[in-house]
Length: 167
Image 1 (cartoon, rainbow, N blue to C red):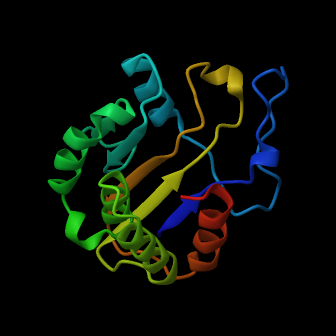
Image 2 (image 1 turned 90 degrees about the vertical axis):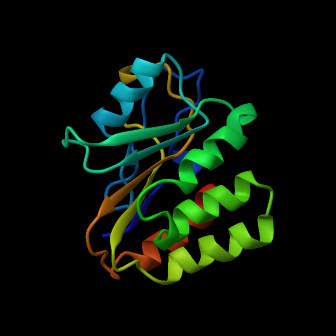
Image 3 (image 1 turned 135 degrees about the horizontal axis):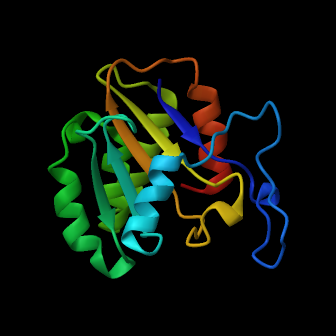
C-alpha cells in the first residue's frame, strides 16, 4: 500500500518544548519507525533525504542518503539507479525536485497522489512520536520503496498529507 506519512506542523512540538506530541488519534499518519531512527543514529545526524529500499526487518534492505543539500548531485545519481526507480513517481518527483525541475516534480507528485503503482509500495515518513527518542531528528522526510502491489485506498490520504507538508 502506498502512503504518505505526515501530519500538520501544529502537531509537532517546538524544539523548545519538553513535551512530545504524536499525530492525533484517527489521523492518516504514521511516524518514523525504529529502523529509520537507528539509521539516523548510525549516520550521526539527520540526512537531508533518507530512502530505505526494502522492508525494515529485511537484512537485504538498503539505505540511500543525501547527507546535505550540497550532496544532491551525487544523491540524484544514486536514486536513478534504485530498483523500480522508473516505476516510482515519488522517487522520480524527488529526483526532479533536486534537479530544480519544479514543474516536472510537481506533476509527478500530483500523479503519485492520484494513482497507486502496481509494482511497489511507496511510503513517505514525517515526524516522530517522542522527540527524546532521537535528539538528532530534524523533521526531514524519509521515504521507502518496497516491492509489492500498492493499494488505491490511501490515495486521498496521500493527497491531503502531501498538501500539509508541502512535499
